[in-house]
Image 1 (cartoon, rainbow, N blue to C red):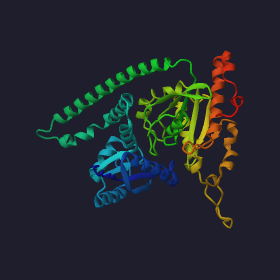
Image 2: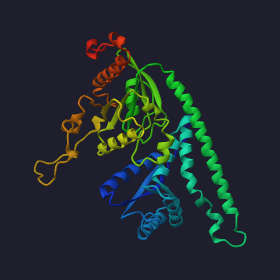
Image 3: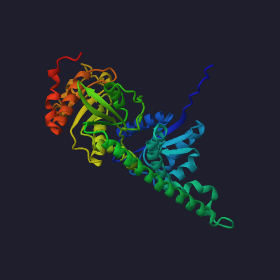
Image 4: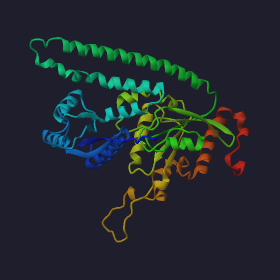
Amino acid sequence: MIEKTDLSYEKAVLIGIITKDQNEDKLEEYLDELEFLTYTAGGEVAKRFSQKMDFPNPKTFIGSGKMEEVRIYVSENEIGTAIFDDELSPAQQKNIEKILKCKVLDRTNLILDIFAQRAQTSYARTQVELAQYEYLLPRLAGMWTHLERQRGGIGMRGPGETEIETDRRIVRDKISLLKKKLATIDKQMEVQRGNRGQLVRVALVGYTNVGKSTLMNTISKSEVFAENKLFATLDTTVRKVVIRNLPFLLTDTVGFIRKLPTQLVESFKSTLDEVREADLLLHVVDISHPNFEEHIDSVNQILDEIKSSDKPSIMVFNKIDQYVPEEIAEDDLMTEKTTAHYTLTEWKQTWMNRLGDNVLFISALEKENMEHFRKKVYEAVRKIHITRFPYNNFLYPEYDKYGEEK
């Protein structure tokens, strides 16, 4: 008999602030992403709180009045978690927990939690563990409040401090050990990459949840895990793909995200070696997302950080089947036309036009325009291959010379 599974989501509230650098629209967009992150981690958002401030309160991130409002809501609705959109300092986290009497997370902690859930291989788990320990180290002091070191007095001198110092030493030793382990695995992976011969390497890069793994499955006929959640792929997957008779290696990499924690950028830099060593990048973009242009900027920024922004690349706009522009009624004379109202044809006439032939519009899920995609990738890989091996020119004729594929 199949047992009934009870899927209970943890109730959470989201908290963010409107500042001079982050207006209300931008905050809403970040909170939408934070809600999706919460859902991915196994939570359910009950309410959002926001406050307009010049800068975050150094003690409690938000003002005392708003904090009281959050406390009452958390208490009355049995909320288990409060999630803040920006990284909290150890002191802020400690103070907020005292007031709200519930679990307090920030965006960094939430992303680390999702990564911990998703890590499958020993390599990914080691990277996540390293990032978690580096995040934990400055926050250890708050975990020993039960010893009440600050109060002092008889019987209160020493032990608390000793415990914390012991813990710090353990964590630092653990960090050192994990870094050594990663260095060893990096060497092994370097050898593996070296053993792949002279095949052209193509890497899928892009924001998280844009459909890279779905595209990988479609063109390589493999079974890479893919679902409509953030960070479905953490482990790098490499597959040999053949278009017509031209073989090359295709790599699926971890997705990027705005406000990516520095600990994760550092610990995942070795995973991004696959991107650094690629000959061609396929920058996959979810064109159905209202803020896809900002996603492109975020990805380009990280590519710049890992010194891969000058590589040959093709912009692949995915999910065209889900793209629906906003409409303006004929008798509406008030609404100003913005990019949200553009059709795909109109988008192609914008800055995308300057990218020339290096643009594709596809749907990996519905397999729309995949023939055009195969042709474009074939031609780009062929160009790299015959530059490297000019004598192989006759082996791989131009795509159209083959005639229609059977």
